[in-house]
Image (cartoon, rainbow, N blue to C red; front, side, top):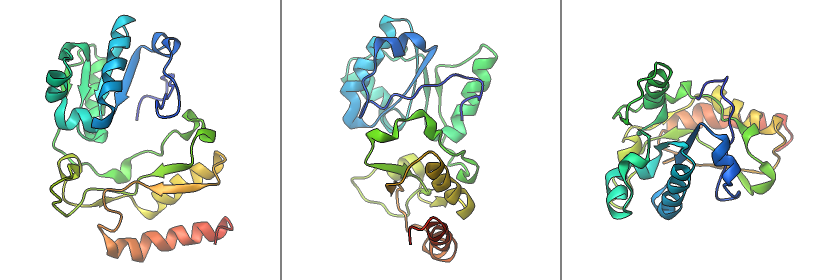
Length: 216
C-alpha cells in the first residue's frame, strides 16, 4: 500500500537483526507490533531517534494502547513522528497524501472497518522465505463473538469481512510464484465467521487451485 516508487526493505525482527545500516538507510521506519513485543518496540524507537530516522507506528499495540505504552514504558509520544492507527486501508492513504503535501499530522486514526477486497497482494519478494516454517495469509477480518480476553473486535469489528475467492487464490499463486512450497497459515480472527461463503465459494476455489498444482 506504500507508493510503488518508494524503495522498501522489510526487517522481521522475529527472524532478522535490525542493523544500524538498516536504520540509517531509511527515510522512515514503519514499525508494527503486538503488546508482547513492547520492549523491542521501545528499543527500536530509541535507536531510530539516535540516528534521526523518522518513525511511523501502527498495528495492534499502538492502535489499542499507544498512550498506555508511552506512559508505562516511559516513552515520549513525540519520539514517534507519526501514528497511523486502525486498519491501514483506512488511515495510511490519508497519511501518505498529507506527507506528500508536506503537512503530515502526528496521529491518524479511524473507526472505519474497510472493504478488504481492495487490499493488495503482499510484497512477498521483501522477505527471505528460507527463514520461515510457514507463510501467513489473511482471508477475513472481524469476529461475531465477544470473548472477554480478546481485543479483535476493537481492532477489526464484529462483522466478518472477507476477501473474494479470486483474491485469495491470487495470494496463494503469488506465494507459489515466489518459490514457496510449504505450509500456509490462515491468520484470520475467525476463519469460519462467514461459513456460507466459505463453503460455497472460497474452499471450492482453493481446492481447484490445489488440484491444479498437484497438492490434492
